[in-house]
Length: 169
Image (tube, rainbow, N blue to C red; front, side, top):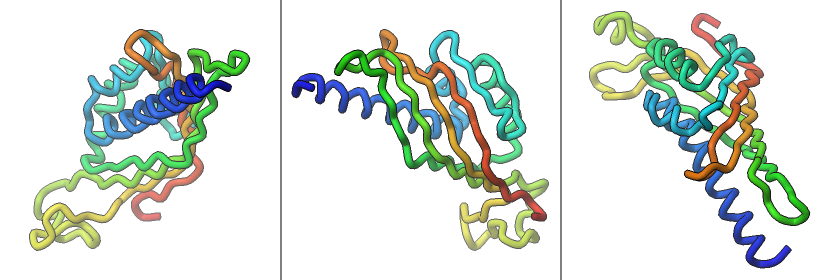
């Protein structure tokens, strides 16, 4: 592998990492147009492994927008990213697979303002913005990415939930 190929590989890995981070930020911030922009035109998302839906990325973005209203506070942590780049005889190709673990704590929307102060573990008026998660899930994502004109894009993402802690559990 030449120095030029090694540098291109490092740049590809950094660009792919930025796409995966962008995915987490888009979901956590509810930036559904940003979410859609991370996918190829034929991109798909499969959340069935976590009890959700599967389909084209634009349809799943709408489904996520509705579903995530239950959890106005959410924070994906995507870690242990393993990036496998297509190898074309020592040169990277235009496809990559990423397997990465996730931890996703989320807070349920309060039913009404008075409930928030009365619910143990929820924010109170003396602790602005402090709340403990009501729902936490962990597992692994599998991403298939393709290099396109604008850069690396997600072709598929599949969620493999391994565990969850839900309210009352």
